[in-house]
Length: 70
Image (cartoon, rainbow, N blue to C red; front, side):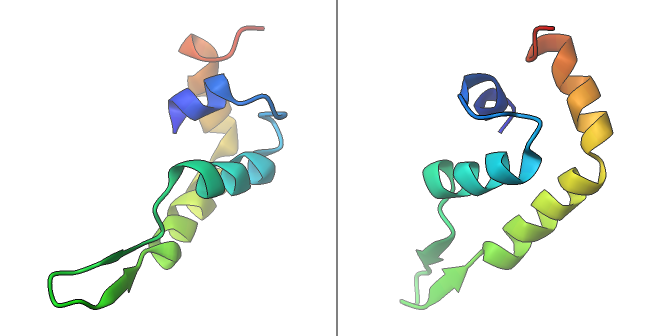
């Protein structure tokens, strides 16, 4: 995901837009297990994104070190 912040052409400070686009372009939200049942990961993915949203200042601070160029 950190590389996505670097490669995206959208405003990286609009964290919701970044997450929405990342979800559409890069993440498999479901799979089929060996029993043929669909397993959906959307709840867990949303929990991760919520955590990053709540800690976005720290995320941006970390990204500035090697990913953002200001």
